[in-house]
Length: 356
Image 1 (cartoon, rainbow, N blue to C red):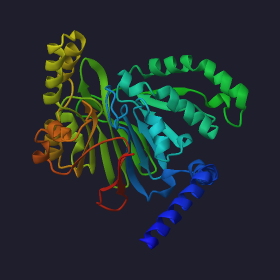
Image 2: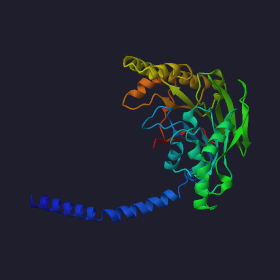
Image 3: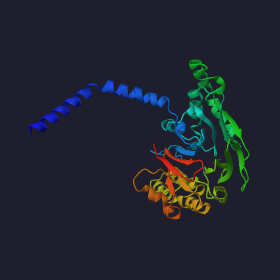
Image 4: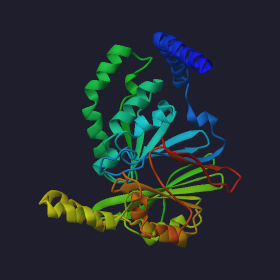
């Protein structure tokens, strides 16, 4: 009894000491953490190959683990981003990517949830490394209007940052973004955007009508490949160009869950949500349909992203899949921070992170 009492007293005294020194301890921990964060570069630690991370796994609906659509792709040491949804660039920072090293952004289409983080992404890329050239933004017809709009909106901010920090941080030549428009390819064809250093980036037509044009992107690097669909219905063109890819990153909307939302909205008289949850059913792909494409294209792994609706409680993932797992078993339901590596000269498909 006496021994136990002594132990309790010692523990209490240690607790008091730690509590009294909490500010000093926090300061030392913070100093070390800041040094690690300031020098972070997730790309530097990757082996040669093709790598992917979801900087945004969701769609337009707010979700705790699924920000707006955003996919980071690393080929060798080159960092690219497909779409720039809300919080995407901040998630990249949380994952340790050096934002100043973003080489280009590729837009699949111009729905707000795919572009609303573009201004912040361009700004953070600019001032994180004192970049002297604007952020290249590739996209189909209409991308010039998108970049012009953001450049106009951020013009005053550009002046403020340059006046405050000067050329070391914010050289005027590097502000904003520069459109790189390309013709949307016809069905059955690819449009090559980059072909150098063993890396090929190609665009393919998808179907997100009435949004036209809409495209997906295929990345090939040193024998490894991945395809990102963007928003689309199930389409033979996607199956055609996904044949044998290592990683198929496919959008997915669960119609059974949207129908439940529609019924709930109708029951309470919410006409706006009833209309929205009805309309979106006709221009997306269900998890079952994405699984069928993955199976028929003989892909290595299927990563669901642009998850609609948000998955917010236990058991909801099973409802979302609705049997898709029985059609194609090699799958991952994405969340912010989910990451994969495809090492060069290998057939390995390695999931390196489950989320943030």
